[in-house]
Length: 398
Image (cartoon, rainbow, N blue to C red; front, top):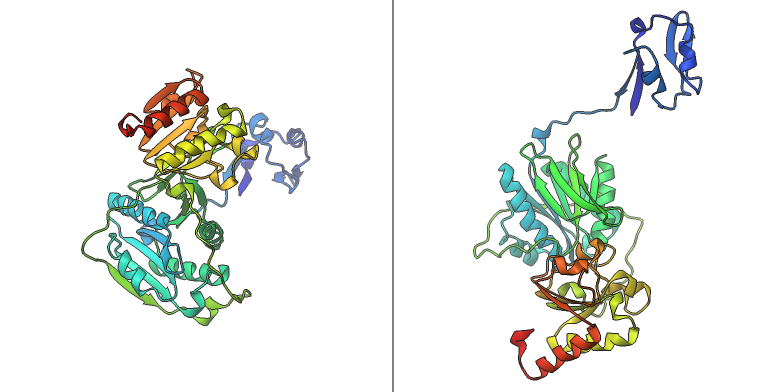
């Protein structure tokens, strides 16, 4: 919080000093100037008053002993014995960040019957895996998991904590960050580490129109969440390594007002994030009926159909098929965009694709700037030609 300081010796005349403040916050009593609670921090007294008479200082500026916080920690998001791939992506990034400052990589694994998962994690270069294995942690409940993550941080004192941008991660990370009175940067698209252990966090802001560069220099730990498919899964090592620390959670940590009565496994749904081939519909396909052509192409290539935000908002496709900042981030081997203009918001969600083929009737469309192959023309004319080529077995030309 900022505080306005008065330097009495720099005020030569008290006659009109109170008139500087339009809110009447400057008071003169016994030949001394003071600031009342009516101050709005407008800084007019600093600008119009005697030079150096008033000074605005940050009274809550704190200094942190950064040497007390070491390493990069990753929360391992697992459900029913399956690790979410984003956690492995973050492990790879954590190894990269920690390597720049010569510090360890930690991982937190919470749940029940975790022996197999723990052994699997030992193949990814983690220095220390801390395991909280308890029957009451079998199903995710926000209070116990918050307490577990808080306890883990107090034990390891990591400088940085990375959490996957999943449904669980997005509910867990803000709670724990609040307990440590530190900042959290959500949906980061870029992370880097400074030599002083400050984490560079970059994420889109204002609908993707700017990229915000965020640091947390005066607080520890530093929290960041990252979406699935932003980074790559590291190569699995042949030999296991790292230490494993088993922690028995206390009764206080397991306390919860939520009771799990039963759980039912959802039928698996194929998500566009896992597709190797995507055919994406934009406004340029003009009519909903033309989605049939895109579906034929996707089926022929063994892929899925996705869409841009306008297509989803028009009700042509399900919301879970939306690609971009407000949808899903994808990294397929091949993506074919059809009638997509190439807005910043869309490109941010698919630029990691290995091969980008863009079809658009507008030769100046922004999507062509990132496409590996550009096809200028009507989608309804080009796709039938592609289907005919594929029907002849000439896949090499696609």
